[in-house]
Length: 352
Image 1: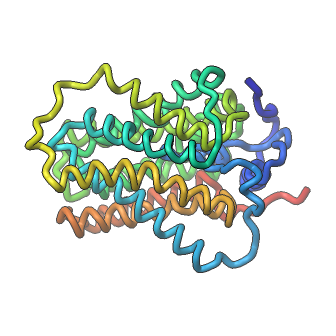
Image 2 (image 1 turned 120 degrees about the vertical axis):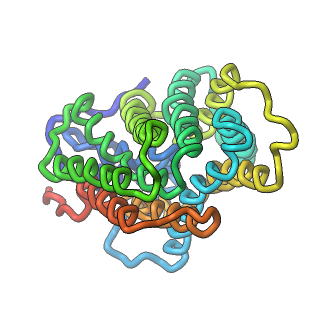
């Protein structure tokens, strides 16, 4: 299995990611943390196959159509936390996770056949299995369980912590230096979580704390999955990784399923949530994401990270009546700023 070049010095990762999106080899000695985040985030493979990505990030203004796609993508992914809250109480976290990965896997497998790309399961079964667990089954199950105790706003805000763990994993396994921006971002992130949980509208108890830790654990899974992709699965087409890991996740979850929920549990609201989170949030969203990567590049596309908490909080308040206090807004703002620091958004690239 091919590996990427070794890392011997840090730099701003946007150039690295843009090179990969354009189908160019990665230069040696580059910071890979942000590219890891871009490659696999919240179950999202970021880079389309090289021929379909003719343009990288640039200084041109974003076209209205692409801006619309970016906002739509944030609204869809923010809606996944709403759907979790709608369905998990009726069918349980494991059945919700299985339905989500199973229906999405079928939909994406159909897409793979139509698009005409091969999965090559005999050669790639191991990466599919590892990512099916680390990047799909485990984090989605953790979010589903958390949805029993905390609101959509909490989950969507905590989801923005994925780049924090990418920075930590990069320091541990990729030998990257933790810059002062990243350290400050990690410290601010912990402060934001404390504001969100300690002063939020939800009464703090053991279950709430465990739910928050489960959400943070899910983002850590995403970061470890990203490192695995960089080190062991960099030669596999991202679309194939997406489909293969969904199929593997649906198989992995099956042995842990409890008795099926009664048919009466599938009210129209629960059915809508299950179909929405699988077909819209976990299948159709990929197609929008791949299109954005091809049109505006990975760096700009990753700004969706900062929009997801906005929509997650909005949907929870509008459709579930979840309370949104000043502590929620303040904690969410601090967490988003922390994420921007960890990703070193706005840092000038060194001239080469």
